Length: 428
Image 1 (cartoon, rainbow, N blue to C red):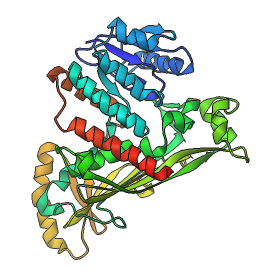
Image 2 (tube, helix red, strand yellow; image 1 turned 135 degrees about the vertical axis):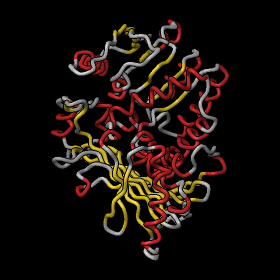
Image 3 (tube, rainbow, N blue to C red; image 1 turned 90 degrees about the vertical axis):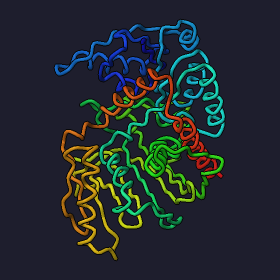
Image 4 (cartoon, helix red, strand yellow; image 1 turned 30 degrees about the vertical axis):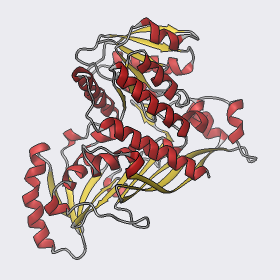
């Protein structure tokens, strides 16, 4: 199969090509407008090809010019197209791709507002009619502590089943903290200026929360179809800005000043306000969930992006922490409820562990505080960048079979309904 890349404005496009894939031609056709976004993408691909350990061997065929989108749909130089860039164009791009009969792997978010959600609904219908697959890149499903949190939650004797919770005390809470300045593939990231414009990137409520809402569905209702018209109820949502100084903006974009189209968000004190933060309280099949995303400019020394997650069961809680005590690496804890007979719970846990080990060999547990820490061998911690290759391999497998799992499309719609409906509510 031939791979095409469409307008790679986000570094995630390059991360899909951090490895080679069986059955994919080495020559990749790139359709894009000329400019710094394309230049950054090409530098990353060149670096992957030139690295000393396990270099890639991609050859790039460029198709530039104002008509790049039209040429993608008429040239027929790709069987699978990867879309990762300016989110203002995302729904238009993926709609054109599936209409042209291309299998489409799109970075999140595939929709950043309610109009985008309606267009996405239509795109899935077109994809089905044309016999092609449309899928988003959900890397966090491949993070080992999240996979184990899901696995342990299926063990009724230990977890006891998910509680219903309440708006004040949700059954599931997920919080993600990110940073505008960070290292990618060993080098400081360069952000495009449009990344700070929520009209182009999308607000925090519809960007990173895509991953969090996806994980709530994937962990709590595995392999089950979610009907957004019946199963989702958005209760409340709020949004607030991250303040970016001119010096910080210059450092991460390498631009001397805010572009004219971004000055609408520059305050009288000269700082940029970008609405990158948000929180959603909602119900899914009657279960209360809360997801929130926070964006700081940069992480404290020695730390990085962090993730917190709790699933509350009738017998125990499953908690992922990634703070200073965990050396800023995600760690899963199993914590029995206060009234639980700890000795009896320990026996139950020991009996349940082989079920997890059958799927994840060498996973262990040890006592930690009032509960147990799940011990994960280093070989499972492949890193966030490697997850892009894992998702791509999975998608190529679906393409080979000619179908996604039956729950994927309705659950993608449920996910984007949740995020875009929350944004509309928060703005009101």
